[in-house]
Amino acid sequence: MNIQSLKNLFRGIYGQHDTEPVVFFAPGRVNLIGEHTDYNGGFVLPCALTFGTYLLIRKNNGKVIRMASSNFDYSAEISLTSVQDKRPGKWYNYPLGVINQLIERGLKPEGMDLLFSGNIPNSAGLSSSASIEMVTAKALVDMFGLDVDLLEMIKLAKKAENEFIGVNCGIMDMFAVGAGKKNQALFLNCDTLDYELIPLELGDYKIVIANTNKSRGLADSKYNERVAECSAAVRQLSKHKKITQLGELTYQEFVDLSHHIPEITVRKRAKHVISENQRVLDAVTALKKGNLALFGKLMNASHNSLRHDYEVTGNELDVMVEEARQCEGVLGARMTGAGFGGCAVALVKADAVEKFISRVGERYQEKTGLQPLFYVSEAGDGVRKIG
Ligand code: GLA
Image (cartoon, rainbow, N blue to C red; front, side, top):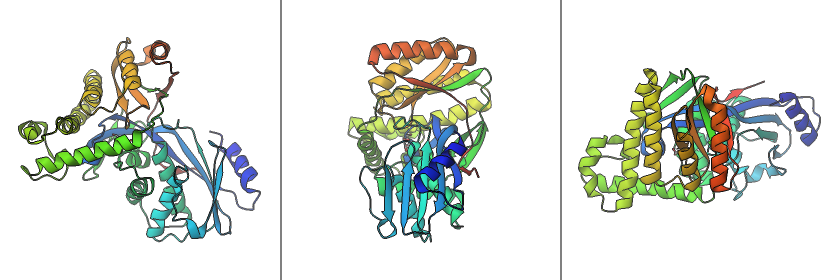
């Protein structure tokens, strides 16, 4: 991304001014393993990406917050007296939700101009929304000298998404976007929020992200439905063992208790969460030992569980993953993110990547009629000020 041309665009939209806008950046994220475990107090293993969202920001001495995005050709002017109002369906609800959270932590909003510019594909499940939220939080905390540290920013960004957007997401995305580090995966305990950065030493292998280009449609309502099903499982199980989250159970404990969940669907949802939790622990051990073959197998098992037990994959993701697994040099492939469309992630031998992209791309398009996109991804650094 060329920062100078973004600054020119900023001046074109908001006019020339003595002070230059300040530039911030927050990445997207890809989750390597540990899906739909975060809101169950479980483990996850994502990493931050090198692409993400830039935010240019400057005070305007007026009584409005002006927002624009280089990704969409519409902008917004929000009077300081109406920042609390949600604007259903509008992209700028993401920054607005964060601004509202910061007001609760002492921010006295002033007139300011914001320009967002992202290179994360929208609706691809690579956390473009957490990236917008975290870049907004970082920029405002810095600009207004608020006493809010990174962990608090992560928590308030999640709250903004839960309360302002209405998606009952967990904390993984904001955490990865906030605390991710170059060439490292982030092993997070979503209950205690303790985390460990694990060197992503992939040797001859690359992480390839495959975008199905299937729009995620009803994803948010389906997501909230899964969150509710997990709560239902906890309600049933807690009559027999004192738990408040599924993440507290080992797989064996779940096997012994699962007959107490009468609805088969709810039982399957819990089975996915608890087995996925164990897979994350196993994947971390495999990564530390450099056992990438085992890591790949765990990725495959994760997808199968998300497909059959959690039922969040759908035809496009299943086709993508099946085609990926049939390619030479692939150790494993799975969907990443919330599911219902979006992206898959695969561990592919470096010298087989080119063939992988052309072959999987061709077969996927043949079977679904959709044109996929591929990104060979590196783990990048978390949210930061650029200058
Ligand atoms: C979305 C949510 C995350 C997480 C994943 C599934 O990305 O925002 O909190 O639940 O789905 O693992």
